[in-house]
Image 1 (cartoon, rainbow, N blue to C red):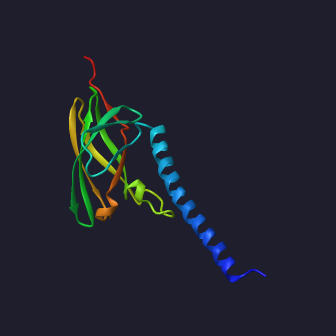
Image 2: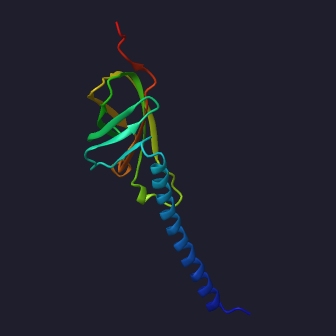
Image 3: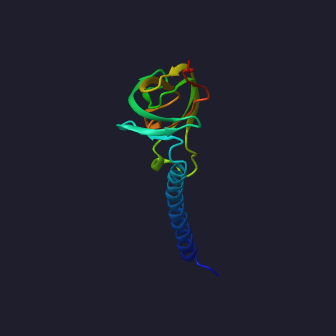
Length: 165
């Protein structure tokens, strides 16, 4: 007959092992996300609120430079101001920005999927060639702890070129 103390010890070992496995799973999820992002290295850009400089973003039709300018509270979320640099000579008429945001990747709970939020934003403006173009994304809903990590990708379906005369 098994003693109660042996059962408690066995239960404690199982609990300790489960805790260790949950921690390891969280680490593996974080590493997997980062590896997947590297696999599609320039298909999206990732920012945290302290990000400086710009990052390269490739679309099916061109390469852009994305820079986070400002994040300010707005209604039930945040207004994120960004600059989209178009280093090409072509203009792009209308574009779609895909935004995902949430807690920092390293803070994701074991049963929580990332991102916590996502939204698509359609713009009718023209992304002028050879210049920085300003855009604003209203990311909502979002609490301060849910805006620690932002991922941006973009579609640019219509290219405008000058006709040779």
